[in-house]
Length: 414
Image: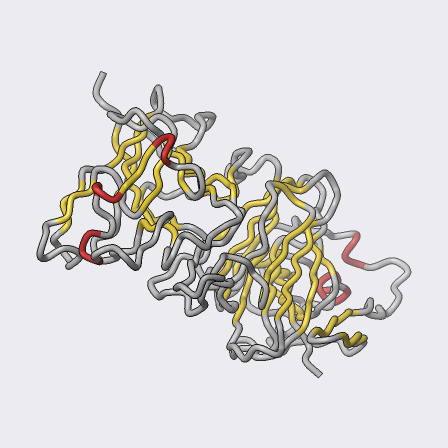
């Protein structure tokens, strides 16, 4: 029997010797259907305490990090134990607090940090089944950040649908399409609808042999937190420089064929979301460019197989404005350009040196710049890239989506 796991991270006031073992609840019900196993974690029986001592000397349940790098919540030892947690490390150098965590499936939590992992993690899972886990918001919580520390599921069909494996997220906003493929390093922000929960459900097809791997960190964000993502941002980046990419972007091609027998696309169908970048202090614009050693870094629409690979990414293969109707990105208010929609197999402003294209050091890029009207402040709207794909990825042969480097630029002197 495969038992799927979720790792809760909590924190404790360490009043006895900490322990790093993992508790696994045993009250599990299996419901077997065709190609699918539903694992339901029944509620654990708790030893009754009429008046728990930790309700008297309560500490602030603030986030903390264990020496092993796990995030958690500081709790008093009795409260940690009653939540099924185990001690693991120290929350503070000045107090004897520790982080604790548990594993379960089919349950729920309202704690700050939770790690949702596959059975046997850090090893892979090569079976079929379904696991659902629910996050209930605590008081004062508005958002859930989902970090895919690892998320490797089977690739979508060549037409962009997640039919073999899929991660489905329900209960929050903005809406998220089913996710599959390789998404390690990606993250999402979802808004809670009041006190309603957000649920994650991973389903895999046991008839298809594949080494799945996932370790998903779930972090609750307070309504008053400076880390809260703006409205409309499914992803939110806070560094001055970095990289953004479409879901399931990767350096390898999708091994699946589409319905006409051509090489499939890695792009997920029916996406529509915003990728936001927080303006840093004294930064008034952001520049986007292609990475110098990835020729497929902007392959959003059309057939990439019939194109000379040395030309992929070049401005001559880019399309803008009204020509972009199926799969495209939108960059509002681009400096020096009349259109804000970009698609095709190239990125505007990028020039390749013919004959030596796509080798390190051979790309000359005139970066695409997006400006904000004044010096950014905490209340300034973020820089944003909108990404849109339609429901038909069949014409987009061997496309991989997009991968862009970004750099925030200093404000011009007045």
